[in-house]
Image (cartoon, rainbow, N blue to C red; front, side, top):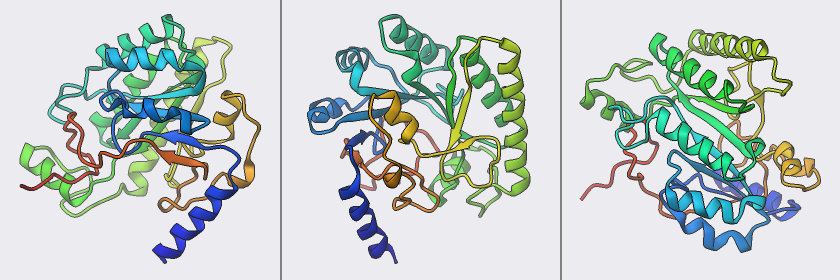
Length: 273
């Protein structure tokens, strides 16, 4: 049951060699409280849709200890992501971060979520190749989950529901179309012939065949950060069904509400007054 699963997770955490911070409960570019907690972890994975000036400075101060996941869906400043920077704005900010000395090898482009419609797949593809053209070699993808409160927001905004009125997850046919799009992106990468190895990853997406299945913190990340592998503590799966994350990961943000980005698909429910 859920309690037993949480207990198993605690056991795995005690066995983990490293303590790796993560910012899944908010946006690290908006809520910078993670910085004051870095001394308590061996390293951290920061997830953001907004490379703010403060985030820019903070990440450079701690660049040897960090991996950045820049979430770029291609929908910034749209009705879907009203307060998220545009693709161009976020792309420019990330490039400036690289120019300032943050290693490109430790920047992960998250096209998360993908909407598996004809338009959504086109948006995701063009987002991927925009970063591929500049040499970014690592990506993470997911397919949109339509929570009941997200469906309500979509309806209120007049947006079509990708899985119908009651659907939460994509069909296998929709997942196959996502795989087709990813294959096209891989072919585009091969045509660049830049000598780099492409990684497209996913977690808790067992219906997809094209991505590498791994957690957002994996042995690959531990190696990037200069640590030895810790295989016994990977793929603990105690967070949610299909989770493959490193068991030593710990949340650095505690503000468990919707962030100012206002994304309609956000898993956090609206606060009712």
